[in-house]
Length: 248
Image 1 (cartoon, rainbow, N blue to C red):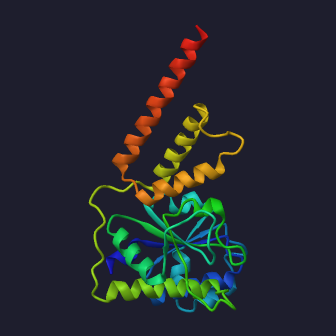
Image 2: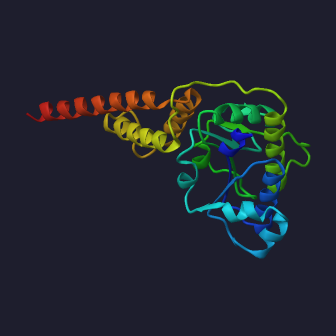
Image 3: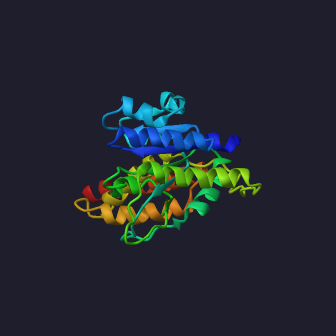
């Protein structure tokens, strides 16, 4: 059950405090302890406490952040929930496969599963932080799932897998790269690719989004990030030297 402590549930911009309370209750039901709220509306409040029932201790320990990067910066693996297909292909997991993957990755450090705002879900910028997406199958004629129910389904699968006697495979013993380190790498890469005119500085988003998918699938470790940033630094230096030589 120690692995459950490494799994963080992140609710992004929840608009209804009752849903926050319901999520806290769902987590406590399934032995999960980490709840993080990013820019919640109308929180804290009595409705959240009432819906949490006896899980108000989860609410009391919940981390409230202004920005997503604060919530997941120390994580090395992030799953986002999505109710629809996306323009750019993504690794998609069902809830059971998501639970298995989260528990496997939790052996290497903190991981997170993110839930978007009730009405709009996760934005593209939020999805850019994800290594995979999880989709909860529903009746196609009525696919909308309440936020608290969605948290309950994923939490149940995690608890069932953790207590079912199935040992999640260890992915790797190498130290994984944290999201905050990966974000620094992506910013560095965009700067270098702009400098060498590989991407259009006026419209870099689509290419950068595809590059994010590529490297997120690879799940870089810390040494690999350092190597890639070293390559970028060398390209940067060579580009500057060429500029100087061309002006002589």
